[in-house]
Length: 130
Image (cartoon, rainbow, N blue to C red; front, side, top):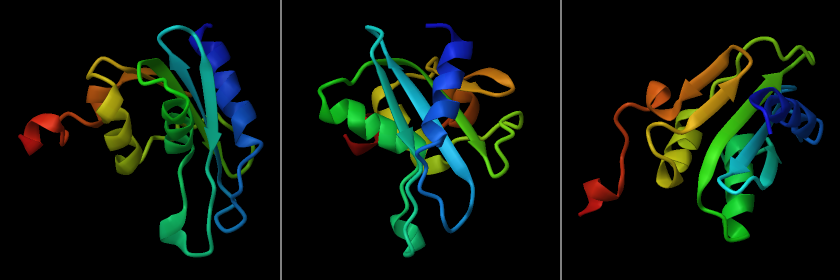
């Protein structure tokens, strides 16, 4: 799957967004190392702190099905269905991704390819616990 196709899957996943409070739909498409695709969307809640982001939805779906090795994630978000502006992953999503992905993990946004380390150069990890 090309990165353009992966980004298209993220846009498609945003169609399932439950974003009645913010009006900002986000979709994520997570690709495993063996080519399986997991999508997610943001799911808001009237108690805002209980909202779940698209990226974490995709990761949790994958992990709950036994997948923990990933090659790339695409993220698309918009309040107007114009996905040309990048929708950057939040800190919580970056931290969750870092649990399973290395610094060179690819993050696809509307402005191109990035690495996880571009967004989270110093992260809390297993090494910090030991």
